[in-house]
Image (cartoon, helix red, strand yellow):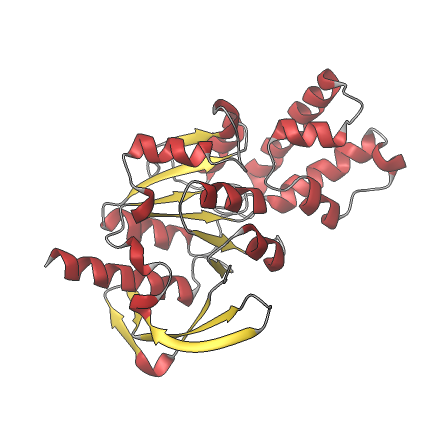
Length: 282
């Protein structure tokens, strides 16, 4: 698989409305042998161009809409240390990324309590989520550029849904804190599907509800399991490298990596999708 990283050639860039459209981009990718390759091509040949006309955009919540991983990490670290997990040695961020981030709560519980004590695992996870909600009410912040992107989506009348492995109470709280309760047309919770991420079921449910085609929809995700779910549902995924290692996101199948929603590479793609869509409507 080739992972594309897009760098705008600024001397060829044009301003179209609120978005930046680049006539050409440098595509930095790794070939099958891992060798870095740089080529210059028209934006119309970029991996996302085929999505035009764009119908919908789907969002993960934790780590995608908001930088919530530090809050989750703190809650897990404090509570696991309190019960003597790992002989009382605090978990590391590396452990959090490998074993916890983006995963379904039942899977996390099984990993943390492999002795099969399901009641203990369930109570621990419930208590941890309650702690997260208390902290999130004071500390949660949107990823940079989120509201600018939401405005762009609304102006174009695109369909949108939030798709998460978080418990519904967490998801609804985060969406409310971010001021996006009226923005999302649908919320899919992994535990309410037959299978949660990394299986495609939550994203397929969102597509079905919105009556959107995977051929004209893409996903924003920040975790390996979420990216795998989006790809398995037949959609390209933009990976947000807010906390998780870029290598992990690439290996999961992300088509493009960005730091936040202000990333000029993202806006170049959105501008080109706008341009192609308008040409096809004309």
